[in-house]
Image (cartoon, rainbow, N blue to C red; front, side, top):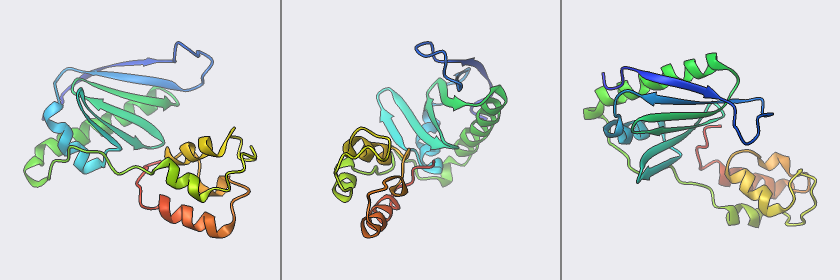
Length: 174
């Protein structure tokens, strides 16, 4: 077993204490850096950083960043949800490490949608009907997985299908 224990810190963001959601940082008592390429391969990391070494996942509608000695999770409902995700991730880390001989390590993130490719499929009217200030911002929100083709009221059905097909190539895990 690679990861045995961690110390958990739960908090609200200091810059905006009125946010309802909590954040969690788990300070790992063991260095798991050697397991990160295997974990990335198994869970399909959204982003893989080499310096400093870290892999980011979009799972359960959360961003989860796993570093050598730390795990950060955003947008939690409560401490119980943090505990469930941390224990699940601890198991995934240990399983990936124990099965590393059977896993092809991966040191890159998943392909990401391109904002300009999304923008090309939008009406580009900056109508604000999607609740975003511009179509460019809306395209960025689609690229990050926060919005979808169905959220643009002015998008014609043909373009909506094209955009859905384009976005279907990417695993956003949201």
